[in-house]
Amino acid sequence: MLAKVSLALAAVAAVTTLAVADRPHHGPPPKEAVDACSSKAANDTCSFSHDGHDIAGTCSTGPDGNGPLACKPDHPPGPPQAALDACASSSRGDACNFTMHDHAIAGTCDGPPDKPLACRPNDMPPHD
Image 1 (tube, rainbow, N blue to C red):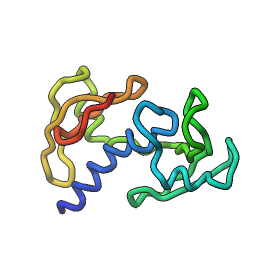
Image 2: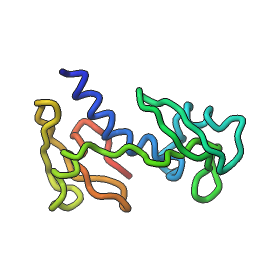
Image 3: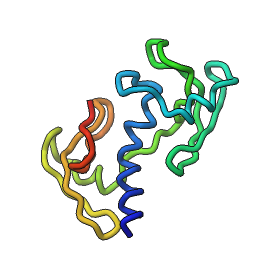
């Protein structure tokens, strides 16, 4: 059961981790995303596996043209619906709680400026 909770928390973290191809201020893209485009050109289709998820995308650099060519997910994974629901009527920084696989998770409403807020577990670093 702890493995299910860890997987759910990894999905919350994936929002930040996998969207880095178009957000260079969050750090470099995962090695798997860079490797997927090593023999491709910008705008070529690509795919890779990261943390047990198969991801399809397009080879791209950051929005300002900087950074390595990497596989930018077509549909980056998002936080679990329960984490989104926990912040549906809240503001950034508000305390929140949700349940994932029978485990109560306490957190803070957070997320990228262009996405809905989600309950970020307290043991995860805040979103820039």
